[in-house]
Image: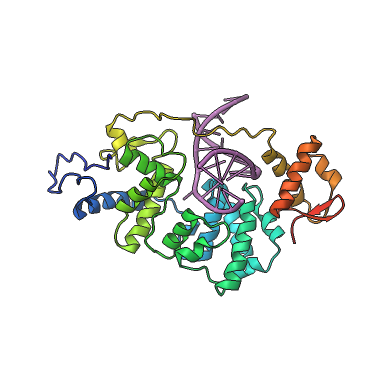
Length: 319
DNA sequence: AAAGCGTGGAC
DNA sequence: TGTCCAAGCTT
């Protein structure tokens, strides 16, 4: 496999050993240089985000992580602030109705996340004394918390050492280490192995490294139009050294949205969100003409617990 | 394990 | 314009 190589340093002919043979860990000094390179870049370029401040509680970090699942930072910022103002602790949210969480979620998208965040708050309140657990396995057991989110909360909020593998990190490793433009569609064991190899040994350093690599992917090593000229890994990057070969493979996505059940669900739920209280069927009929698809979408929302039928032809957000 | 799940912005 | 993408999770 390729690797992040040492930069061709004309100034200091590095005494560091060349890239290690497959299977062997590279020299600590070399790793240390790589870590310093990325950490220095992060120190100078990190965005000033509210969930990264010292005063951000583990709950605040968890809220941010839920909201950031597939939603851009810019749209999360105001929702994050409003959410924490209303529900500063898990117990505050748990004491409120799940429908209120769905309403506060607004237009962030994927509203099931709101429901799961509420359910997580209930679990934290009932099973963890109202404190966000600092144990990775306990985090993973919470609703809406997967491998990434568990690692992110444990790392960012509790400064533990975990492989934090999100879309940004995967892309950075795909390019810098593997030498391809994009990672595979699904996360592979090889990717976890690679990320683990490069993870600093010290928890505190590992935690900062995790967020730093993510930030690099978000700001420089972007999916489209990466700014390689501004990248601290420019000289080491396997993709760069290979001449930045374009992605080869199957189309990575291609989801149409217009006319889908997803769009129908969104329209219906928007009506429920904006109407405080019960909503008659007629109000829903207005926003989606196709009766068959409308019924299917509404059934789906009910099945997901996002909508509650209160009577024949009357609906509301769940209580 | 591939598909379903929202929404808005960038190019 | 349509396509792609955004700190994924669940079934």
